[in-house]
Amino acid sequence: MYHLAGHPNVISIRGAYEDAVAVHLVMELCAGGELFDRIVQKGHYTERKAAELARVIVGVVEVCHSMGVMHRDLKPENFLFVDQTEEAALKTIDFGLSVFFRPGQIFTDVVGSPYYVAPEVLKKKYGPEADVWSAGVIIYILLCGVPPFWAENEQGIFEEVLHGKLDFESDPWPSISEGAKDLVRRMLLRDPKKRLTAHEVLRHPWVQVGGLAPDKPLDSAVLSRMKQFSAMNKLKKMALRVIAENLSEDEIAGLKEMFKMIDSDNSGQITYEELKVGLKKVGANLQESEIYALMQAADVDKSGTIDYGEFIAATLHLNKVEREDHLFAAFQYFDKDGSGYITPDELQLACEEFGLGSDDLSLDNMIREVDQDNVSHTFPPFFFLLFSSGCSD
Image (cartoon, rainbow, N blue to C red):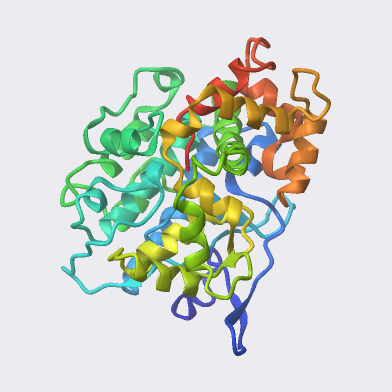
């Protein structure tokens, strides 16, 4: 990150301090919220604004690549606004998976987040072109509110990334400009050699200042979908945690012992170093970047460690999650008064217990966004809808 110091759209390091346990980084404060949350909050959104955001995102990618840096984990959650003002700068964060690369160098470790990972990453043979794919996925979502490739579980998402058809027929795509479609199509070519480079993306007529992007509002459904997509990812992680903590001893046989083995100091929290050592003990041959990605995915409350509930949630098999009694237990956790309904106030209370603020989940609109027909507030439809939404992270 020191190589990118001074760039207006890259988070800056204020200082680094080391003690006997860890290295502590002091980062620039970004109090303006995540990219998607800001768009939804403003309510008015045009193709031209999407093009402006695309310029910022791909501009960071271009600078990184020009300095021989590959980010490898570009996703909306890694773009934050500095403050709440209209002119607030958008900052790229979380360079934990970033690496230096040489021209022609091939990487093989599978890292990134399911919706945004490039097909060549899944094939374990990739270079910086993978960042352009991830940026293309973000732009696709900026334009229509949902990711281009999705399914009900992680493996299904990977299959779609590798073989799925890019959809430009469903609403709102018929009303979106040909320039936008052309750009996204060329950023999401599966052959990385044919894919646009970051520099070529910035020269595309739709992206350029005063270019082809029209200044007409996008369909209001785009904002609704974007809000739902962002919020459901977070709520699903919370529900998985609740399910994990309600499983019987028999159902988590072996996982409890594994947690104890990895938690070498018996603190009840697994640190990154403990995870690294523990995985090696059980014969997992993972690269450091892959271990970091595991840590990021499991650490729901972003505390920097994995507690017992997070560990069990991260290691559950999906067939356990889908059992009706487990879903019912999770529903009862959120339904604090036993009314058979989950209200925004109950979600607020659950979020506080998980260390999340109301802004993280857009609570006032969450249930309405998930359930457009107002029939799924009760169990089991609400949680069946949650776990079939394809919103795993």
